[in-house]
Length: 500
Image (cartoon, rainbow, N blue to C red; front, side, top):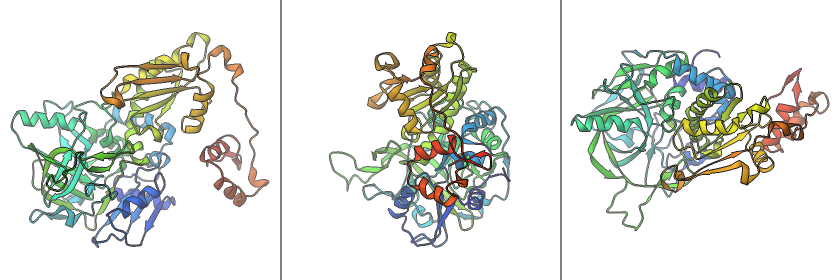
């Protein structure tokens, strides 16, 4: 990989050089328009919105983590090797470094704070309750008696609503975030809970902030910054916050400093306005539904620090980007568990976009001998044990493309006998979504593999027969699955396989 990507600006330069970024020069409104445009390019190029209505000094950047191949390229690997790279980084940490002065503090606001006057916070749809900060990474320092290494910092995402008041946000957290463990620690001791919300970061920090749902490889008290430094190849730079006893990510574009008012929970909506029987919609959540507004903690903003002409990074929960963020550490945890269980049989794993980052997984294995019959069931159990909230697992053979949902569904259609290969686990969690787990084993029994051999077509350099422009035009009319198959199994270019 050429150079290191340690800031969002490095990321933009890197993708522009590769032709994977799109600059939008027309003026766009952060209310509804930016979200609609971002959704239209879901899973595609990095987007840089150059002209934001009402915010002449800044830009909005979106789709930073929208494509799995792009994410892997940030770290100099292919997507097939991303789990190995992540696990290596966790096992070989790099200490963060303190810097002063810090780029994130080129401009400092401590008086007359008004978040919406400074940040182009997006409202996603006309159904939503208001503007939501989606790319904000909350950084907290673990108390020393909670930390497994000192100092240790936790990064996490939360629901952050702006606009209820000029100088405060609502912050709602899922039950399984280590952020809440630290909150309860300070609350028991009646101590103030100081944190920073960091926006516009190195890609590696977004991965650790997403973090899956309590995976084995990211336990409470472990420092996210050390693993992040190893992943990006350089130490994470931090600095002391200006107004609270906390730390900021020094290369962030924007930082909101402040404290969590844990004794003051507020509604994410104005009760005087919304008096319907059900709460109003919040914004599009990662499941693909409109989420509901609820009660949340109050985050009192004590300072806003920024770089000059900051890049406001926005992420959409209902997106491929969100699925990627949730899936990367979850996949690494499954990889770790399955590789330990059956190192000679397990090949790889993947969470398809439709599995929403944490709800399902495909594991790929190879049976080498008849005595390994049943190893796929052991790998399914290992995957379920890798992290909480995994809803279903599909096991496939080595001849199935785990990155192609059509190929996975092909295996599910042709290689399963439901009464034998589908298992249901009841009372495995809480709520309609997580109460039941299930698995499907589509692997072919070893003695029957000769009956299930897939065709192998002759590899050809079609450019000698059809021409490059005609190939591209033809491929534009084909399904993604068909293009992928052709690129992997038929097309060669100059004696090499052609990636499509």
